[in-house]
Length: 213
Image (cartoon, rainbow, N blue to C red; front, top):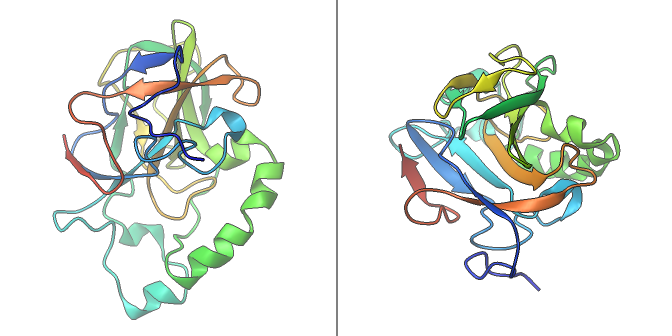
């Protein structure tokens, strides 16, 4: 049974964060709509959330007949390469940037891509996260995933402040189109850590809501 995220587990850890971007973004897989938000509690992902960069029409990219039948170049997506910023002050404990940005999968290609997800999960969290950054804020780690190859602008051991540019939105790892996957957990290894709830300014970011930051 799904647990409503506005009725959190008693005693569960939480951290207040800013949004890791500016501009207009669409919320998907929100823990304010269901827990676990991505349909699994593996890799401390129960409270993870996805943010998709969109244009002024609320679309991540134009839809054409080809969208439904074949993969699309990520360069067609206006949000590909949009700046990602630190959601809090913290110390960088991981920074990966060498994974390629693969084509985007919408329509029928997305169904095929979903069938291959188990294979990626078997390779471990880094294969799912793609290019990513992990920030330690006290005892909690915040991960920002699926970043653009070569865009990571921080190094392990570096202290960053809220709003600092740290990378760019990409389509690496387990991602169907350019977006930022964000999650928090207690401990440096998501395979063994406990998930941590994230609290954002203003109204809870529910599925389908549009954020204009």
